[in-house]
Image (cartoon, rainbow, N blue to C red):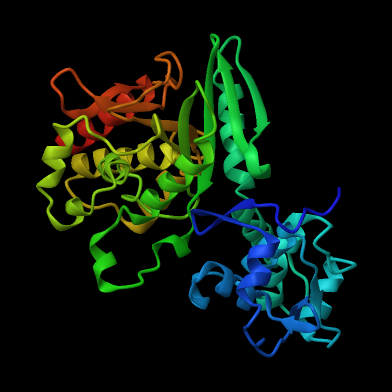
Length: 394
C-alpha cells in the first residue's frame, strides 16, 4: 500500500473524539518549534528529531497528559511518518523480543504497533500466562476487537431472517464498523468500548458529570456516521470492567441530550422526559451487555433461603449452595449476551421494531404518554425480575 500524500487528511479517534489531520499540518505546526530531547522513539522532520508526542501536542494543541506515546505513534504512522526506535538496549525491549521476534514498523501489523508502548511500560522480567492475557486485553481494548466480535456474534445468534452484515469504507479512509441490511433497510453501527481511563476525573466539576464518557462517544459516533445516508445510525457501547450505573438508561438519555444543565439541576431530567428536542444526530444508542444471569439467580436463591431460615447463611452453607449451583442456571459464571436499546426521541430513521427482541433484551424510548421509559422487556428478564421480587417478598 502506497504512503498517503502529505496533504491527505486522515480521520482518527483519540479518547472518544474524532480528529482530522494531514502530514502537512504536523510539519507546519512544528516548523518553528525546537524539538525536545528524544528517548525511545523519534520522528525525523528535515534534519531534526522530534519525540512523537511533541508533534501531536503541537498539531492538535492538546496537553501531554491527554494521550500516550502509543497514541502519537499510531496517528503519525497513519499520516505516513516513520517512527524510529532508539537502538539503546533496555530490559523491557529484551523481554518484548522474547514474544515478538522484531519490533513492528508503521507498515507492519497495526495492532502490535499500538500495543508496543504498553508492553514497554509493563513487560515483566519473564514471560507468563497472566502477562500474556493482560497483553491481549490491552490490545483488544485499543482496537475494540472484543466488542466488535461480541456484537457480530449477537447479530448472527439473534436468528433474524435475511440479515446481511458488511463493513463499508467511508471518506478519509474510515470504515463503519457494521452496515446491516434487514428487510431492505440499512442500519449503520459504530462500536465503542469504554475502559477505566474514561472515568478519570480532570476536575471537581466532572464529579457531577457521570455522563461525560458516553456523551463523548456519542459526539464521535455522530461524526463517524454523518456520511452514511438513508440509514438508521446507531452507536453500540460496551464495557468489560466498568460498573453500573454507567449504562443506566437515565445516564444514556442525559448523554444523548448533551445538556450541561442536567448535571447542575437534577430536575432537568423531568423536562428531558417531556421533550422531544433531543440534540443527538443518532437514531439510537445500543448497550451491549454480558449479563450475569447466573449470579442474579443465585443471589435470589440465597435471599429466599435466608428468608425461610430467618437468619443469614453461614459460610459453609453458602459455599455448599455455590457448589450445588454449578452447571445450572444459577451458576455464578453463567452470562447472557444481550442488548439494551435507547431510541432517540427525534430519530429520523428509527430502528425496525422486529430487531433486538431477544429473551434478555430491553428497549427504551418515548412512550405514548410522552415519558421516557421501558417499552419492551424480554421474557427471561421478566422471569429474573419476578424471581427477585419473590425472594424479597418472602
